[in-house]
Structures are given as C-alpha cells and as structure tokens.
Image (cartoon, rainbow, N blue to C red):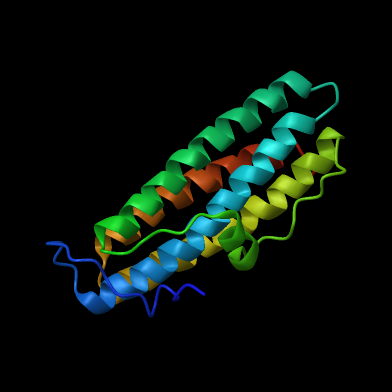
Amino acid sequence: MAKSAKEAKLMSTRNDVPTNAKQVSIQVLQACLVDTIDLYNATRQAHWTVKGPNFIGLHELFGTFYADLQESADEMAERIVQLGGTPVGTTQALAAGTRLEPYPTDLHAEQDHLRAMADRYGVVAKTLRAAIDQTDEAGDADTADLFTAASRSIDKKLWMLEAHLPA
C-alpha cells in the first residue's frame, strides 16, 4: 500500500518552501487532485450523454469545462512535484480518495445532468476554498494562489450551471 502524502518522503528539490508547509500542501493538493480528476470524469460523462433541446449548447459547455479541469489537474499534479512529492492519479487512487458522490450513469435529461453537475461543482468549490486556507496557514502562498485560481474557475462554472436551473 502506498504511503499517504503526509508520510511520504520528499524528493530532493531546491524549492525553499519549508518542509512542514510542503507536507501540508502535498496532502491538500493530492486530495484536490483526486476530486478534480473525478469531476473531470463526471463532466465527460455528462458531455457524452446529455439529451434535450439545449443539447448542443450543453455538450459544448461541458466540453470546455472538462478541458479546463484537465488543465487544473495538471497544475495541481505539477505543483506536487515542484514541492518534492509524487502525484497519484490512478483509477484506484481516485476510487479510494474522492470526496464526490459517484456520478449516476443513467442520467440523460439535461436538467438531471445540470443538477448533478451543480451538486459536484459545489462540493469542489467548497473544498478548494478550504485548501486555500490550509495551504496559506501552512506558509505556502504559491499553492494557496494556485487554489485561488482554481476556486474562481470552479465558482464561475457553478454559476453557469445554476443559470440553467430553475430558481
């Protein structure tokens, strides 16, 4: 069994973020990486299966969402490496570590997808805001900044999803 990010030995790096801050940031980054990859996969599921009068608009919207999530996941994984850690994005790590509810694979109606997506984007938005605070308090302003950018992006996507839902 792999060591947790907290127990993992750091790889040598000239990055001068204090070791304790690196350990906290790597742990928080890994948790958010797993959630982001899971959200990416859920968004692709919606992209592939959405049906309804607004199909093309939602299909394209979900496509841009998962492209952005792929970039965000890459930034998180690369930050883990910059801090001397090893990102883990395997299917097994995702299944064991995600904080998101499993995405239903029997959804097709656009409103059902929009509600399911909004629920998951809301969870990720909340965890990203917590990640900002955790990494800032640990003394890693750069990682906190990475999470701030990710948080703004997720909040915007959540707003777009909610704009399609009845008040």
